[in-house]
Image (cartoon, rainbow, N blue to C red; front, side):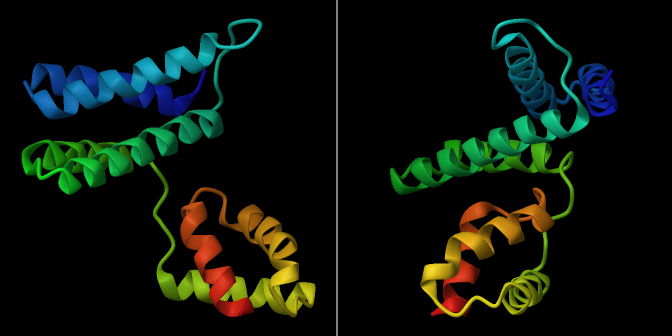
Length: 150
């Protein structure tokens, strides 16, 4: 059984006992998404920790995008709630790479692959995504690769 899923369940129980409404609602939503992922497809299965992390990344991205949409529509209260939920979900994800570390990693991959221009972006992106493994958002990685190849 996935350790991360067990941790989410235990933290949900703790949040419910502590009457932490935000954390309780967020963890319920995340566990619901994990359960939905487990039963999707041809047969039910137990998710590994990596698969649970992928669900968590997807949920964090949804919260970030919803917060931007609410903020753009002038609904600050809902935007703050979405950001708070994203913060709860982010606590279960590996630490994100700093900009300097991402820059160095991309530069290293460009040197190793011998990339010389934008035509090599796909090759560089593939190699970088393998090394980043969820520690940086794809859009951030793509922007850095574009910047260095340009």
